[in-house]
Figure (spheres, rainbow, N blue to C red):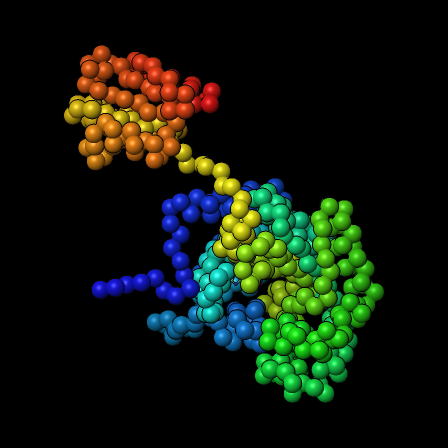
Length: 425
Ligand code: AMP
């Protein structure tokens, strides 16, 4: 029988898992500093949630969802992204009534999209995301952007670029939409089928087309920035002013769009500029969605958020050759010789662990030399050696593997002595 891992998924093995944990720790610690609290929603939801919350015309809903019928005949879908479910939960749990507004949440977990797998694109991937729901203050837009930049910077990424744009409010978008239709309509036949169907439904998404990216009409297309009304322009200026005040560098790209009706004002992406990162350079995408909560049956409450995948975060770290700090080094390996000594180490290794130390012993009945080799592989800071003679005298030999220093310790003082030495390191 041969059972292989499904296409577009991966096993995260020991050795790599520690890197994930390191990045997850950075992200969650920073969320805590910024006062974002974790929310956990189900892996699957009613299919309709994503049809409404992600949008019927998007690639995700049209082509990429893992949808199935359960035994009760319900149509369910493995979540392809996090925002729709967080907003559902916000409405269902009436978080709009919480005295602390905006409600600031973060989530982390697997997402599923039936995409063509390639470097940086998986069918199951882990997104880390943030949503701030309940405020339309440009300061919260700047805060959300600052938060994700802080995560990347703290992890050590340097070759990243923040791109921002404004999609304006409904009035600005209606004006821009008309201009886009007039611009593309006469020559829409030269564009791909998707773009042709986007012309009436959602012409802004033509600007996002990968196939027709180089068409001359793309470059001359009307820019949303020329259609922003007073309120939208001031809003965008404020966001930029706050980012500058936080020393966050950015470029404005008027072609950066989010195609759904309820996306408005701030849109942003963070790209990796590291050589060898691969063709897909987007690390993170985010934006403001003032219409989404009411679309989900809640009150008319504004929101903003972002999501990035851990897979691309890790890939960016590798592309920038950032050193990982070794966090799982062993404190002490207990090597023993003889049956009685071996029996004794069962309790000894346990005592070290209870005292909060990373400790290991031999389970293969190996010779002393092989036990030392095992200790080396685990990068043990100390090796404790318990032979039969030592046991008779209630002693154990402690060797500092960095200095080579060796000393005999009474067994009853072993844990304390080692603990002190660890503190001195
Ligand atoms: P989106 O929800 O499409 O705006 O994507 C937000 C972020 O999720 C992207 O910037 C990527 O970091 C990540 N992402 C999206 N799709 C995938 C995928 N198939 N594999 C890995 N990461 C992904």
